Length: 396
Image (tube, rainbow, N blue to C red):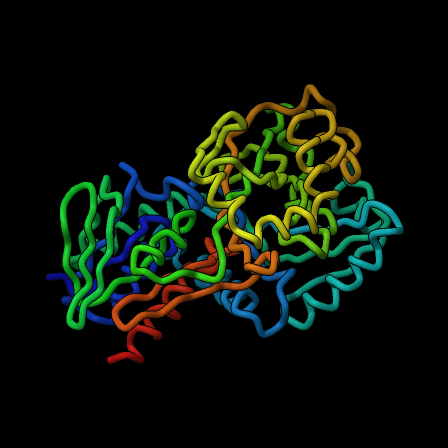
Protein backbone atom coordinates (compact mmCIF):
# COMPACT_ATOMS: atom_id res chain seq x y z
CA UNK A 1 0.00 0.00 0.00
CA UNK A 2 1.38 3.37 -1.05
CA UNK A 3 0.59 6.61 0.71
CA UNK A 4 0.22 8.50 -2.59
CA UNK A 5 0.13 7.46 -6.23
CA UNK A 6 0.71 10.17 -8.82
CA UNK A 7 -0.39 9.46 -12.38
CA UNK A 8 1.68 11.33 -14.96
CA UNK A 9 5.43 11.64 -15.41
CA UNK A 10 5.41 15.15 -16.83
CA UNK A 11 6.76 18.14 -14.98
CA UNK A 12 3.64 18.77 -12.88
CA UNK A 13 3.41 15.16 -11.70
CA UNK A 14 7.12 14.96 -10.91
CA UNK A 15 7.14 18.31 -9.11
CA UNK A 16 4.17 17.13 -7.01
CA UNK A 17 5.94 13.92 -6.04
CA UNK A 18 9.03 15.87 -4.99
CA UNK A 19 6.96 18.35 -2.98
CA UNK A 20 5.15 15.52 -1.18
CA UNK A 21 8.39 13.81 -0.23
CA UNK A 22 9.89 17.07 1.02
CA UNK A 23 6.90 17.72 3.27
CA UNK A 24 6.30 14.09 4.29
CA UNK A 25 9.71 12.45 4.72
CA UNK A 26 9.45 8.69 4.58
CA UNK A 27 6.12 8.66 2.74
CA UNK A 28 5.59 5.92 0.17
CA UNK A 29 5.09 7.82 -3.11
CA UNK A 30 4.75 6.19 -6.53
CA UNK A 31 4.75 7.99 -9.90
CA UNK A 32 3.16 6.09 -12.78
CA UNK A 33 3.93 7.09 -16.39
CA UNK A 34 2.32 5.32 -19.33
CA UNK A 35 5.19 5.95 -21.76
CA UNK A 36 8.65 4.38 -21.55
CA UNK A 37 10.22 7.71 -20.61
CA UNK A 38 9.38 10.80 -18.55
CA UNK A 39 8.27 14.13 -20.07
CA UNK A 40 7.11 12.34 -23.21
CA UNK A 41 4.22 14.65 -24.11
CA UNK A 42 3.49 18.31 -23.31
CA UNK A 43 6.54 18.84 -21.09
CA UNK A 44 8.93 17.46 -23.68
CA UNK A 45 7.39 19.22 -26.68
CA UNK A 46 6.98 22.83 -25.56
CA UNK A 47 8.94 25.93 -26.53
CA UNK A 48 11.24 25.84 -23.52
CA UNK A 49 10.30 29.27 -22.17
CA UNK A 50 10.50 30.44 -18.57
CA UNK A 51 7.47 32.70 -18.71
CA UNK A 52 7.20 35.92 -16.72
CA UNK A 53 3.39 36.06 -16.40
CA UNK A 54 2.65 38.69 -19.03
CA UNK A 55 -0.81 37.79 -20.27
CA UNK A 56 -2.78 36.49 -17.33
CA UNK A 57 -5.64 38.10 -15.43
CA UNK A 58 -4.37 39.68 -12.20
CA UNK A 59 -5.20 37.47 -9.23
CA UNK A 60 -5.80 34.34 -11.35
CA UNK A 61 -4.01 31.12 -10.53
CA UNK A 62 -2.17 31.48 -13.84
CA UNK A 63 -0.81 34.89 -12.86
CA UNK A 64 0.12 33.89 -9.31
CA UNK A 65 1.65 30.54 -10.20
CA UNK A 66 3.62 31.93 -13.14
CA UNK A 67 5.19 34.82 -11.22
CA UNK A 68 6.14 32.50 -8.38
CA UNK A 69 7.21 29.79 -10.81
CA UNK A 70 9.58 32.08 -12.70
CA UNK A 71 11.59 32.63 -9.53
CA UNK A 72 11.23 29.04 -8.29
CA UNK A 73 12.35 27.55 -11.62
CA UNK A 74 15.43 29.73 -11.72
CA UNK A 75 16.31 28.83 -8.14
CA UNK A 76 15.80 25.10 -8.79
CA UNK A 77 18.01 25.23 -11.88
CA UNK A 78 20.74 27.14 -10.06
CA UNK A 79 20.73 24.54 -7.26
CA UNK A 80 20.75 21.60 -9.69
CA UNK A 81 23.24 23.02 -12.24
CA UNK A 82 20.67 23.07 -15.05
CA UNK A 83 21.49 25.59 -17.80
CA UNK A 84 19.03 28.45 -18.31
CA UNK A 85 19.30 31.91 -19.82
CA UNK A 86 17.23 34.96 -18.90
CA UNK A 87 17.10 36.60 -22.33
CA UNK A 88 14.05 38.81 -21.88
CA UNK A 89 10.94 38.93 -24.05
CA UNK A 90 10.00 41.57 -26.61
CA UNK A 91 6.32 41.95 -27.44
CA UNK A 92 5.97 43.73 -30.77
CA UNK A 93 3.12 45.70 -32.32
CA UNK A 94 3.73 45.16 -36.03
CA UNK A 95 1.50 48.08 -37.06
CA UNK A 96 -0.66 50.83 -35.54
CA UNK A 97 -3.72 48.58 -35.39
CA UNK A 98 -1.96 46.41 -32.81
CA UNK A 99 -0.81 49.28 -30.64
CA UNK A 100 -3.99 49.44 -28.47
CA UNK A 101 -3.58 45.75 -27.69
CA UNK A 102 0.05 46.32 -26.77
CA UNK A 103 -0.94 49.19 -24.49
CA UNK A 104 -3.45 46.96 -22.71
CA UNK A 105 -0.75 44.33 -22.23
CA UNK A 106 1.58 46.96 -20.79
CA UNK A 107 -1.04 47.81 -18.16
CA UNK A 108 -1.70 44.15 -17.35
CA UNK A 109 1.98 43.38 -16.94
CA UNK A 110 2.21 46.23 -14.45
CA UNK A 111 -0.88 44.99 -12.58
CA UNK A 112 0.84 41.62 -12.21
CA UNK A 113 3.86 43.30 -10.61
CA UNK A 114 6.27 42.39 -13.40
CA UNK A 115 9.06 44.67 -14.57
CA UNK A 116 8.42 46.03 -18.08
CA UNK A 117 9.72 48.79 -20.33
CA UNK A 118 7.88 50.55 -23.17
CA UNK A 119 9.90 50.86 -26.38
CA UNK A 120 9.10 53.18 -29.26
CA UNK A 121 9.98 52.11 -32.80
CA UNK A 122 13.49 53.52 -32.53
CA UNK A 123 14.26 51.83 -29.22
CA UNK A 124 12.79 48.57 -30.54
CA UNK A 125 15.17 48.69 -33.52
CA UNK A 126 18.10 49.38 -31.19
CA UNK A 127 17.31 46.31 -29.10
CA UNK A 128 16.66 44.06 -32.12
CA UNK A 129 17.85 45.46 -35.49
CA UNK A 130 16.09 42.68 -37.47
CA UNK A 131 12.70 43.34 -35.85
CA UNK A 132 10.24 45.92 -37.18
CA UNK A 133 7.28 47.40 -35.33
CA UNK A 134 5.61 50.59 -34.23
CA UNK A 135 6.25 49.87 -30.54
CA UNK A 136 7.28 47.12 -28.16
CA UNK A 137 7.41 46.01 -24.56
CA UNK A 138 10.56 44.57 -23.03
CA UNK A 139 9.98 42.08 -20.21
CA UNK A 140 13.43 41.31 -18.78
CA UNK A 141 12.51 38.27 -16.63
CA UNK A 142 11.53 35.85 -19.43
CA UNK A 143 14.06 33.14 -20.18
CA UNK A 144 14.80 29.82 -21.87
CA UNK A 145 15.43 26.33 -20.55
CA UNK A 146 15.18 22.62 -21.36
CA UNK A 147 12.28 21.28 -19.30
CA UNK A 148 13.34 17.70 -19.96
CA UNK A 149 16.48 18.46 -17.97
CA UNK A 150 14.32 19.83 -15.16
CA UNK A 151 12.33 16.58 -15.16
CA UNK A 152 15.48 14.49 -14.98
CA UNK A 153 16.60 16.46 -11.93
CA UNK A 154 13.17 16.15 -10.31
CA UNK A 155 13.31 12.38 -10.85
CA UNK A 156 16.72 12.18 -9.16
CA UNK A 157 15.37 14.10 -6.16
CA UNK A 158 12.28 11.86 -5.95
CA UNK A 159 14.25 8.62 -5.96
CA UNK A 160 16.85 10.02 -3.54
CA UNK A 161 14.00 10.75 -1.11
CA UNK A 162 12.68 7.21 -1.38
CA UNK A 163 10.00 7.71 -4.01
CA UNK A 164 9.41 5.30 -6.88
CA UNK A 165 8.95 6.03 -10.58
CA UNK A 166 7.59 3.41 -12.94
CA UNK A 167 7.31 3.92 -16.69
CA UNK A 168 5.29 1.78 -19.07
CA UNK A 169 2.31 1.82 -16.69
CA UNK A 170 -0.68 3.00 -18.70
CA UNK A 171 -3.71 3.30 -16.42
CA UNK A 172 -6.62 1.09 -17.49
CA UNK A 173 -8.95 1.50 -14.53
CA UNK A 174 -9.52 3.39 -11.28
CA UNK A 175 -11.65 2.57 -8.27
CA UNK A 176 -12.11 4.59 -5.10
CA UNK A 177 -13.19 3.08 -1.78
CA UNK A 178 -13.58 4.39 1.75
CA UNK A 179 -10.00 3.57 2.72
CA UNK A 180 -8.05 3.38 -0.55
CA UNK A 181 -7.74 4.02 -4.25
CA UNK A 182 -7.02 1.12 -6.62
CA UNK A 183 -5.12 1.83 -9.84
CA UNK A 184 -5.18 -0.80 -12.56
CA UNK A 185 -2.39 -0.51 -15.13
CA UNK A 186 -0.86 -2.44 -18.00
CA UNK A 187 1.91 -3.45 -15.57
CA UNK A 188 -0.21 -4.50 -12.59
CA UNK A 189 -2.53 -3.21 -9.87
CA UNK A 190 -1.46 -0.65 -7.26
CA UNK A 191 -3.14 0.49 -4.04
CA UNK A 192 -2.78 3.83 -2.26
CA UNK A 193 -4.31 5.95 0.45
CA UNK A 194 -4.70 8.85 -2.01
CA UNK A 195 -4.29 9.62 -5.71
CA UNK A 196 -3.15 12.67 -7.66
CA UNK A 197 -3.77 12.62 -11.43
CA UNK A 198 -1.62 14.90 -13.58
CA UNK A 199 -2.52 13.26 -16.86
CA UNK A 200 -2.55 16.20 -19.26
CA UNK A 201 -4.08 15.08 -22.54
CA UNK A 202 -5.91 12.22 -20.79
CA UNK A 203 -7.11 14.16 -17.73
CA UNK A 204 -10.84 13.93 -18.43
CA UNK A 205 -10.65 10.21 -19.17
CA UNK A 206 -9.17 9.48 -15.75
CA UNK A 207 -11.99 11.44 -14.13
CA UNK A 208 -14.51 9.32 -16.03
CA UNK A 209 -12.83 6.14 -14.75
CA UNK A 210 -14.25 7.13 -11.35
CA UNK A 211 -17.76 7.42 -12.86
CA UNK A 212 -17.63 11.22 -12.71
CA UNK A 213 -18.77 13.09 -15.80
CA UNK A 214 -16.73 16.30 -16.10
CA UNK A 215 -18.29 19.48 -17.46
CA UNK A 216 -15.51 19.82 -20.03
CA UNK A 217 -13.52 17.80 -22.53
CA UNK A 218 -9.82 17.87 -23.33
CA UNK A 219 -9.17 19.00 -26.91
CA UNK A 220 -5.72 18.52 -28.43
CA UNK A 221 -4.31 21.53 -30.26
CA UNK A 222 -1.22 20.74 -32.30
CA UNK A 223 1.41 23.46 -32.24
CA UNK A 224 3.67 23.23 -35.27
CA UNK A 225 7.17 24.66 -35.30
CA UNK A 226 9.95 25.40 -37.70
CA UNK A 227 13.59 25.95 -36.81
CA UNK A 228 15.78 28.62 -38.36
CA UNK A 229 18.80 27.46 -40.34
CA UNK A 230 22.10 27.72 -38.49
CA UNK A 231 23.15 30.85 -40.36
CA UNK A 232 20.16 32.67 -38.82
CA UNK A 233 20.74 31.70 -35.20
CA UNK A 234 21.97 35.20 -34.38
CA UNK A 235 19.08 37.09 -36.01
CA UNK A 236 17.54 37.92 -32.60
CA UNK A 237 18.72 37.74 -29.02
CA UNK A 238 15.41 38.16 -27.16
CA UNK A 239 12.27 36.06 -27.35
CA UNK A 240 10.12 37.88 -29.94
CA UNK A 241 6.32 37.67 -29.58
CA UNK A 242 3.48 39.29 -31.52
CA UNK A 243 0.46 40.89 -29.85
CA UNK A 244 -1.89 37.92 -29.27
CA UNK A 245 -5.51 37.59 -30.33
CA UNK A 246 -7.41 38.41 -27.10
CA UNK A 247 -10.17 35.94 -27.97
CA UNK A 248 -7.81 32.96 -28.09
CA UNK A 249 -5.57 31.41 -25.40
CA UNK A 250 -2.66 31.03 -27.81
CA UNK A 251 0.21 33.49 -28.14
CA UNK A 252 0.83 33.59 -31.88
CA UNK A 253 3.86 32.58 -33.93
CA UNK A 254 6.98 33.75 -32.13
CA UNK A 255 10.76 33.50 -32.40
CA UNK A 256 12.32 31.65 -29.48
CA UNK A 257 16.05 31.20 -28.95
CA UNK A 258 16.58 27.72 -27.46
CA UNK A 259 19.04 26.68 -24.82
CA UNK A 260 21.01 24.68 -27.44
CA UNK A 261 21.64 27.84 -29.50
CA UNK A 262 18.99 27.27 -32.16
CA UNK A 263 15.90 29.41 -32.78
CA UNK A 264 12.40 28.01 -33.24
CA UNK A 265 9.54 29.66 -35.12
CA UNK A 266 6.07 28.94 -33.78
CA UNK A 267 3.82 27.50 -32.67
CA UNK A 268 0.52 27.86 -34.45
CA UNK A 269 -2.58 26.17 -32.98
CA UNK A 270 -4.54 23.61 -35.02
CA UNK A 271 -7.20 21.29 -33.60
CA UNK A 272 -5.65 17.83 -33.90
CA UNK A 273 -7.54 14.67 -34.88
CA UNK A 274 -5.73 12.63 -32.21
CA UNK A 275 -4.94 13.48 -28.60
CA UNK A 276 -1.32 12.59 -29.20
CA UNK A 277 -1.31 13.62 -32.85
CA UNK A 278 2.09 15.17 -33.35
CA UNK A 279 2.01 14.68 -37.12
CA UNK A 280 -0.54 16.08 -39.57
CA UNK A 281 -1.48 12.56 -40.67
CA UNK A 282 -2.09 11.24 -37.14
CA UNK A 283 -5.72 10.22 -36.66
CA UNK A 284 -7.61 8.51 -33.84
CA UNK A 285 -11.26 7.72 -34.46
CA UNK A 286 -12.17 7.53 -30.76
CA UNK A 287 -10.53 10.87 -30.00
CA UNK A 288 -12.25 12.63 -32.89
CA UNK A 289 -15.66 11.08 -32.21
CA UNK A 290 -15.51 12.10 -28.54
CA UNK A 291 -14.66 15.68 -29.45
CA UNK A 292 -17.36 16.09 -32.06
CA UNK A 293 -19.98 14.50 -29.78
CA UNK A 294 -19.32 17.07 -27.07
CA UNK A 295 -21.56 20.14 -27.58
CA UNK A 296 -18.91 22.55 -26.34
CA UNK A 297 -16.52 21.55 -29.11
CA UNK A 298 -19.11 22.21 -31.78
CA UNK A 299 -19.89 25.60 -30.22
CA UNK A 300 -16.17 26.41 -30.04
CA UNK A 301 -15.62 25.54 -33.69
CA UNK A 302 -18.55 27.69 -34.77
CA UNK A 303 -17.45 30.61 -32.62
CA UNK A 304 -13.84 30.58 -33.81
CA UNK A 305 -14.28 29.42 -37.39
CA UNK A 306 -12.41 32.35 -38.96
CA UNK A 307 -9.21 32.19 -36.85
CA UNK A 308 -9.42 28.40 -37.04
CA UNK A 309 -9.38 28.48 -40.83
CA UNK A 310 -6.43 30.88 -40.80
CA UNK A 311 -4.49 28.52 -38.52
CA UNK A 312 -5.36 25.56 -40.74
CA UNK A 313 -4.25 27.41 -43.87
CA UNK A 314 -0.94 28.31 -42.28
CA UNK A 315 -0.49 24.72 -41.13
CA UNK A 316 -0.82 23.57 -44.73
CA UNK A 317 1.20 26.41 -46.26
CA UNK A 318 4.79 27.09 -45.25
CA UNK A 319 4.54 30.45 -47.01
CA UNK A 320 1.45 31.42 -45.00
CA UNK A 321 3.23 30.42 -41.80
CA UNK A 322 6.25 32.51 -42.78
CA UNK A 323 4.09 35.57 -43.36
CA UNK A 324 3.01 35.49 -39.72
CA UNK A 325 6.57 35.99 -38.52
CA UNK A 326 7.61 38.29 -41.39
CA UNK A 327 5.15 40.86 -40.06
CA UNK A 328 7.74 41.70 -37.40
CA UNK A 329 10.90 40.05 -38.79
CA UNK A 330 10.84 40.78 -42.56
CA UNK A 331 14.36 39.47 -43.28
CA UNK A 332 13.31 35.84 -43.01
CA UNK A 333 12.68 33.78 -46.16
CA UNK A 334 11.27 30.34 -46.94
CA UNK A 335 14.79 28.95 -47.16
CA UNK A 336 15.39 29.99 -43.53
CA UNK A 337 12.75 27.57 -42.18
CA UNK A 338 13.64 23.95 -41.42
CA UNK A 339 11.31 21.26 -40.01
CA UNK A 340 11.05 20.94 -36.23
CA UNK A 341 8.94 18.56 -34.09
CA UNK A 342 5.44 19.69 -33.18
CA UNK A 343 3.82 19.72 -29.75
CA UNK A 344 0.26 19.04 -28.65
CA UNK A 345 -1.46 21.20 -26.05
CA UNK A 346 -4.25 19.86 -23.83
CA UNK A 347 -6.96 22.51 -23.83
CA UNK A 348 -10.08 22.05 -21.68
CA UNK A 349 -13.26 23.15 -23.45
CA UNK A 350 -16.44 23.78 -21.44
CA UNK A 351 -19.95 22.74 -22.48
CA UNK A 352 -20.75 26.29 -23.57
CA UNK A 353 -17.76 26.29 -25.96
CA UNK A 354 -15.52 28.39 -23.73
CA UNK A 355 -11.82 27.65 -23.84
CA UNK A 356 -11.05 27.28 -20.14
CA UNK A 357 -8.17 29.63 -19.46
CA UNK A 358 -7.18 28.94 -15.87
CA UNK A 359 -6.16 25.87 -13.92
CA UNK A 360 -9.01 23.47 -13.12
CA UNK A 361 -9.07 20.79 -10.41
CA UNK A 362 -11.59 18.10 -9.45
CA UNK A 363 -11.54 16.63 -5.93
CA UNK A 364 -13.01 13.38 -4.63
CA UNK A 365 -12.58 12.06 -1.08
CA UNK A 366 -9.37 10.24 -2.00
CA UNK A 367 -8.22 11.76 -5.28
CA UNK A 368 -7.29 15.09 -6.78
CA UNK A 369 -7.31 15.55 -10.55
CA UNK A 370 -5.40 18.31 -12.31
CA UNK A 371 -7.86 18.72 -15.18
CA UNK A 372 -6.57 21.82 -16.95
CA UNK A 373 -2.94 22.85 -16.66
CA UNK A 374 -2.43 25.20 -19.60
CA UNK A 375 0.66 27.17 -20.46
CA UNK A 376 2.53 28.33 -18.40
CA UNK A 377 2.26 25.03 -16.51
CA UNK A 378 5.93 24.12 -17.05
CA UNK A 379 7.13 27.45 -15.65
CA UNK A 380 4.56 27.16 -12.84
CA UNK A 381 5.14 23.50 -11.96
CA UNK A 382 6.78 24.05 -8.58
CA UNK A 383 4.11 26.38 -7.15
CA UNK A 384 1.37 24.21 -8.71
CA UNK A 385 2.88 21.26 -6.84
CA UNK A 386 2.85 23.26 -3.60
CA UNK A 387 -0.82 24.13 -4.21
CA UNK A 388 -1.69 20.47 -4.82
CA UNK A 389 0.05 19.34 -1.63
CA UNK A 390 -1.67 22.14 0.31
CA UNK A 391 -5.03 20.79 -0.90
CA UNK A 392 -4.09 17.25 0.12
CA UNK A 393 -2.89 18.43 3.53
CA UNK A 394 -6.18 20.23 4.20
CA UNK A 395 -7.92 16.83 4.15
CA UNK A 396 -5.84 15.38 6.95
